[in-house]
Length: 81
Image (cartoon, rainbow, N blue to C red):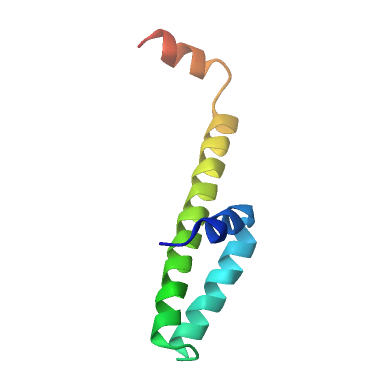
């Protein structure tokens, strides 16, 4: 797994920064620019980046859903449950 320091650094990335880093990793691995052990570490980092991007996208989706809801709909759906 990605070490704790690396995970903390990834969590600071914006979505765009994470995608750029992920693109760089993919390019290096595909071109065979790094040894196998390093490519495994890069794979782990890439998976952490993907997880981070998914989290950002899920938060954005929830925010969009909240913004898009007609006023009062949230209150009605909770009252009917």
